Amino acid sequence: MSIHELDIGDVIEKINELKADIVGLQFPEGLKVHAIKVAKQIELGTGATVIISADPCYGACDVADVDMGDSVDVIVHFGHRPLPIDYDLPVIFVDARSNIDLLGCIGSAMGFLEGYNKIGLVTTTQHLHLLDEVADFLEQNGKKILINEGAGTTKGQVLGCNFSAIKDIDADAFLYVGSGNFHALGIKLFTHKPVVVADPYLGDAREIDEFADRILRIRSARIAKAMEAERFGIIVSSKRGQSRLELAKNLKNMIKEEGKEGFILFLDDVSPNLLLPFTELDAFVMTACPRIAIDDSKMYKKPLLTPQELEILFKRRKWEDYEIDEIKYTR
Ligand code: SF4
Image (cartoon, rainbow, N blue to C red):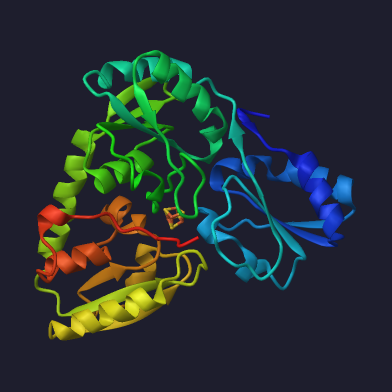
């Protein structure tokens, strides 16, 4: 089954222990191709009826307990580790471990890490089981490796919206093991230190600095475009793991103190089309997933800012103190 391993035997055992009659399954987009095969296995192994959530799923912030809670006895959520969030019904989290080789791309990363001694090492859920192996390799090659546990996340794990695992790491540079620029960009904006991506799917490594500079230039332009805004839409998510109503209320007060108007908008899946009817609003502030404003910026016609960018707009924070927005956990 592709490069991802899903431990279905363990899931069947847990479902049987719970004596569940109806089981909800939830997969992120990349794993949905396995949904039917997994559903068949679970129905055979438990005798339960399976319902597959076909809605998009972005992370452990987005467990379908609110949507499916009345219809199922348990939810099996694939591909993400649990966050410290209270759910309405039992949720079984299943890692999707990737068995792709990591050491090839780590070898390539060594060139980019030359001159740096203390390296902060991080990855995402699917490679966490191989992180010690990567650390050993780097230490054998003369690096001092620093790996920490975050609040709400596992040792060495970063999310696109949570960097607590690297908060207290005093590294010369960070090495992110994984694909794409999404997490590496977050690490760069959080630490402002050199970040190297070791990408096992491409089998090579790269620096993220140039890409991050380009994103920061776009963010600066979006803030400048919001200068004339008088009315702001403050977006709040109904997803349990993204919902920050208190923050939204504080932002509404801040906007009022600046002599402008703020209106709280409550959404499930945030998308540009859903904001189009609000023609009287000049700009938006995002309290849902912190990455929507940064990564999907081009899709939105009107400026869409993070809370920290709103502070910069109102001169309550200096541009030099730019911070990526995070969803923080205390446990
Ligand atoms: S809030 Fe956004 S970045 Fe954070 S886990 Fe959810 S989808 Fe990922």
